[in-house]
Length: 201
Image (cartoon, rainbow, N blue to C red; front, side, top):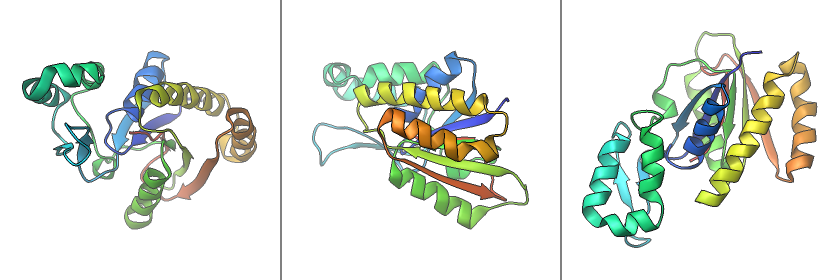
């Protein structure tokens, strides 16, 4: 079953891009998105984040941070993250702005999951597709993002190999939740824009 998958987090920088990289490498039909109003990256202090508009390229952000403090952003892994990201696509994309169709949505944070459901409730279209929105909480750090990518991959593999995803998904998610020891949220939607999305930051 060739499912159209989207992985989504808040800024389309860390969690969703780590999952995007892994799923793409494994041959899945996958896209990634963020749901936040802005792209936010750590800055010199908690009260001084680096903020960019969606549509800003990973290349521009990489160059901008290199000019500000290359040593710091290299040591904390952000330049490495941006280097990975720019090899996958041009820049962060906001889910609410896409018209693409998906089959499954997997988010990496309950807040992002709620934003997706809100978007569906406000912007459902005439496509009678059933979309499964799924959340697995993944902390927004590099170690968790790597683990999250493995979890997203394992879950996506189960869904892709399902012979009847709409009828089997509840049991699949129950078994997967017990295996990964993380609570899973799931909401099926009809008449929505998307089919499968995996969400992370």
